[in-house]
Length: 611
Image (cartoon, rainbow, N blue to C red):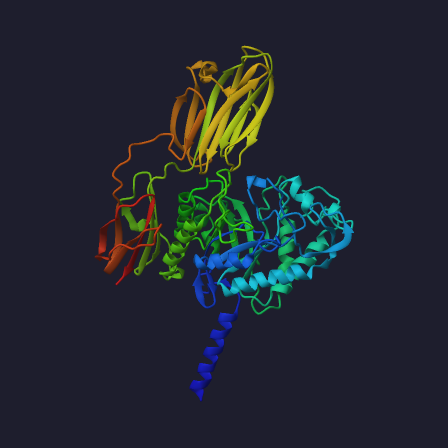
């Protein structure tokens, strides 16, 4: 009887564990536990409009994620939408067709919503929206997909605010007669704070019965100037955590901390997950390792449309100790919910069936290991890293090593600064134009003329100033490259002067040290480490993915030297594109062993486990 009693307790505990929502892993809270198993979230998802866009066939979309072995998606809660042209996105799922936008708030009987149909009533819920939401989450659960519900988003541009139900022009309640910078504030929201609190509680109540939900309070709160106030985000976190206070296990709450990397400061105690966007290289994981919480790279983009940059970003991030990777996949659109949309070359990111299968290979690779027992430790790699390349190791001491090797990319992140003088050819107004992918800043005579220090596909920016013919104009042009088709160009135009590159004949080095501009190049996207300095006759570069300082390529052979503890070990190389494994390599420790890789391009992974 005693044995039966103990067995019944064990079975009951197991069933409770399987039924409980995704949570932090009890043995290593830097990772997740879901349905009783250690979990990392690796996915390539649509642009967050799956529920609010009534024309989007989300079941087909979720079927595609499951087929590609991906296990996460993000969705917006209906308090935000976009318009055509935002961020240069073609066929944006966050931009529903006229009259096809669904929100958590019900429509009123009064016409006049900015994008078709009646205005919203912020005191009533739309039952059809929540039915659609719960069907989405339930079907995602069947497909093994975790859903991050993002509750709010700042209004990047007036066009987003013009579409928002919280804008007084779009609701019948007279609420939100404010600027686009104020709806997500405690003291200037125009009566919206109580509406937002009720919405947070409503989402918690509606989704309580699911095991595959996490909440994020607000997407990119730092992206506007001024940013979303910290006290508002803390207040909404308090509201959400209070709504889940009596639950046996509350859902995880995440904060979106920054683009790139940053150290988390004064985290809210209810926040369990710290998300970043464009987190490459993955320095942010080490920066915040001491918090013992999962770190996510939750949005990618602005590095071209090719596969290599995003595949490498995923492998780098997970092998650095990250727990979540979400690629923003623009191949999912209305009518192409299977992820086969052929987007234009100007799209601000990538995604396609091949890349998704490669992310599935990464997920399979990670789940071959007991990764909750592992931590980043590159010290086991004693040599053999490709020149200009990188290698990362995730290690379970005495048991296993997971290693990812990248050859030198055509070019990695870099930044540049050009200084000198331009001799004005005209009297009157002179226009200076920059064309860049990515960020650019231009000063003329110490005046900041162009300031677009952001990830962007190649785009033109223009500044104008009054000049006199023959006048020497002091210029400083700064540029950073994160990925994609690199370009940095300085052109001019004026009345009677056609748009063209600023010619070498009018450029001079600082202190008249010679012709051209002084070009200082740095590794890293914010002048982190001096690379090279040279004289550039012009700034009219279209590097694409090539290096500003190309070097002769070697034969590409790679043989890593790995320091292994005592024991018998089995190693195999994994092709990150096909998932094919090499023949087993058997070696003995202790000591440094050399493991030669098969021929590969771009990147390869290595699995080493104790026999």
